Image (cartoon, rainbow, N blue to C red; front, side, top):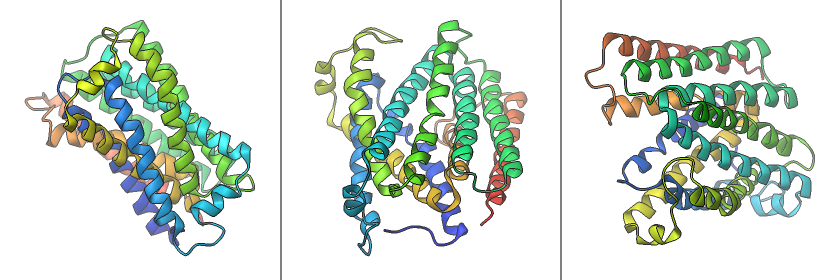
Length: 325
């Protein structure tokens, strides 16, 4: 299988994962008046299919025991369960994050959910796989968390927030706790013998996400947190372009996830996950440069944006230097 042989290659892969994680939502923004619960069906299949493609190509280079099919055949049931459970949990967390954004707005949802996930995921992953400098990693996580808070402050300064809602805050807290839980589960499946390769983990992880849709997404369609109930009939009536956008969004996120896991095999999940969670910075860039979300913004909002970018760049430097290898 293909895997990084130097820290530089691993770092590039983690940065690419950040770009992918921060960019996939653009495909949903291109749909008009389309429910996220419906978009998510295509998205889930997209992340699974691209993971299989990468596993059969990059994950099977040179064959041997580490090739995808060979690794899958020799996998322990417990590691497969951990990887699938990680995907199942991620799926719930991601849907709740979107619901939280719709209830309380990006200004409140992102700092709560991603902030909790960042700290929880890095700390628990490092406990399971203590790779790199704990001090530098902690400093990087602190800066990244501050950057997420500044993103929220920047959006809040625009005056577009939906206001505080107890229900929305609870949804975001649950999302964050679940979002931070999948990385330690993946760490376990990649560190306890017989270990799964990153490509095998990616396939089983995304399969778990698809399976979750048939449980959690169905429940949300019938009893949504936001809006009226929606049926599958509306899914089949949607334009073909909407389905393609969902598959594309899933493929983009899936590439980022696979790259992040592959890089983690070299630098450790804690470091790779921490860098990957800089994705809100990429999302903010799309919002500024493409969607013009900050057009006409005041100096306060712009100041928060500048502070956010500075903090994320600082976090990237510290986390990169945290690796000792």
